[in-house]
Length: 115
Image 1 (cartoon, rainbow, N blue to C red):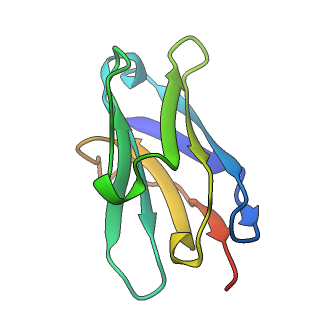
Image 2 (cartoon, rainbow, N blue to C red):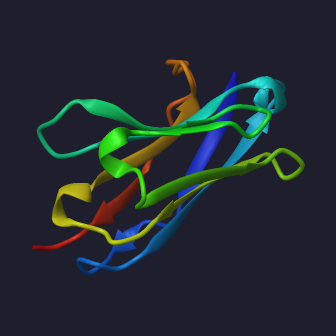
C-alpha cells in the first residue's frame, strides 16, 4: 500500500500552467507504476497519465503535449506538469498506483480552470 498526499492545485486561468506534486509513503512506491487520475464534477474518475518505476510514461491521448508525468524514486514523489490548461481540465486530481489500489486514494488536489 502506498499512502499519498497530493498538492499543488488551485485556480488557474485558461492557458496557464500548474505543477501537481504527490508525496508518498509506504513500502512499494519504488516498484510500482504510479499514475495521476482526475475526476471532474459529475464524471467518472479517469487515468490521466502513468509512469513506471523505470520512467516509461503514458499520457492519455487527449492530453498528450499538454501534460507530463515524472517521478523521483529517491524522494518517493510523482509529479504532473500541466500546461495550456483548459476549462475541461477542471477536476480533482489524485495520484495512485496503476492499477489503482483502493486503499491508497488520498484527498486529491483540486484544479479549477474557469471558462
